[in-house]
Amino acid sequence: MSESLGTGLRALALVAALVIPLAFLSDYNLFRLTLVASYALALLGLNLLMGFGGQISLGHGAFLAVGSYTTGILVASFDVPYWATTPCAALLCGLLGFLVGWPALRLRGPYLALVTLALATAVPQGLKHPALETWTGGVQGILLSKPDAPWGLPLNPDQWLYLVAFLLDCMAFLLVARLMRGRIGRAIVAVRDQATAAEAMGINIASIKTRTFALSAMLAGIAGSISALAIEFVAPDSFSVFLSITLFVGAVVGGAASIAGAIPGAVFIVAVPSLANILSKSAPGIAYGAILILCLYALPSGVAGLFRRTRKRGRPRVDIRVAQAKPEETKHAA
Amino acid sequence: MIGLWHQVLSGLATGGIYASLALALVMIYQATHHVNFAQGEMATFSTYLAYTLLLAGAPYWAAFAVTVLFSFVLGVAIERVLLRPVAQAPALTLVGVFIGLLLILNALCGWIWDFTIKPFPSPFGSASMLGGLISSHELGSFAVILLVLLLVYVFFRFTKLGLAMRAVAYNPDSSRLVGIDVGAMLALGWGLAASIGAVAGLLIAPVVFLDPNMMTGTLLYAFAGALLGGLDSPVGAVLGGFLVGVIENVGGAYLVGTELKLTLALAVIAAVLVIKPSGLLGRAVASRV
Image (cartoon, rainbow over all chains, first blue to last red; front, side, top):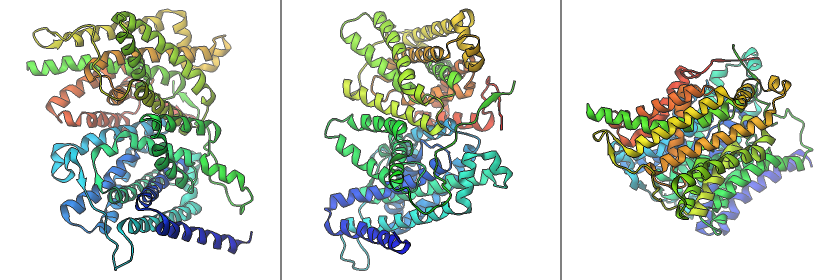
């Protein structure tokens, strides 16, 4: 297949992914697709952090929560226009990610997972705290409404929000893909695979790790902001520790060390509960857990890895997406 | 002042439960360097089993013994089936397997025993003791935990099997060379950890009530305790568990209020990791590059 034809096909597929749902899907299905788009953003951030950066987070739900609440509070309490709240959520979460990433620098593997899990567990309790109730609405949460399409566009709110989420996704995926192909991307992977060698090559490990964390949190914040507008409701119990765990499962199942893997991961997150709920209330949990473990044994690079294996003949380039090296041997100092 | 003593004593009582769960975490960590994120859910599952036995009319201590034995078998089975194949895998895979186990056990509890919150009996009742300073359940569970800790100590310190397990935790390769079955020791460690976790579950259930998510908070405190004491030090884990129990109770009563107790655990975890990552009694490790 020639290069230009491939690019043309890709552009066509993108346009189709935008136009076909807008034209044919019901409002409810469009809403679910908007959710997929927002989870894809969060998973993109998580893949960047876990798959490429080698830092495990079990707490990205916390950043989603901050993103959602930023949008919720700004719209409901301060009458800020909705389109201005998403950049605010991104900035705030980026800053927060930077702050969390800083102590996390010292932590490897399971320890970071532990701290982020603790963060995710503590967040709902904090959101319910009476001191914040004027803004957060306490247990009741905040009610929002979907924004109308501007400039007299012939779109209903669901269609407009899907369009926004879709364009945001395109932008974020393009930016992250370009980032990973360049100098910084290679530095991120080098820090994951051989931190000492990377440092010897002049890479500032602390700065790379904290910035990766910040960018990852920023993407989760944007996802939170979009999903708050789509769901039209923000409440503390939507951000329980299980949201973070769900995101982790989505990232691994989609393929953590890939950019495209965020999309099958997001579809998985949205589709599995509604499919499994038909069976019983606890079926989603069992399905998530079983599929996660099966994936780890049988499909270590996720759904994205499956696609990659079937179409091997691509452009030759440095493969930065191989699985991680084995954990370093630790010896006791004594 | 009486109020403070009351908080300290009940902190020690819940701290004992955190200490035993922390000890279970440390036992697995020491032998394999894995942090078992599913430890809490394993304990919940065991507690539900005890609940079924009690409903069927079994005497409390018989149900207790059966549950502890069953948990041992469950722990061994999980190690053999789920973890042995990925023992050398990267951290992401391991965390993933533990999270998968957590999700499955959590959903299974809800599936088999539904999601409603259930009261769980205490063998010690809830009478007020020592002039209102402590309840009989707190005192009783404190005694049980101390007994468990003593048994664990005696096992590791004075039996040949305990020595072999410590050897495997310290240096698996050399242990294999002197004829210790390393695989069996790892499975045994998992079984013991699951049993100790089950005891913790049985003792915390009368306080927090039985539901599939009852261990989420408890596990967090246990993690905090294990980290505070040092993840590779069983004595440290026990000490850390008790300390976290007291910090949680006193801090919750006088410092931050009950709404932010979990945040307090988070703060302890973050503080330990930033200030002294090896914990109070842990050994500092150096990585060979």
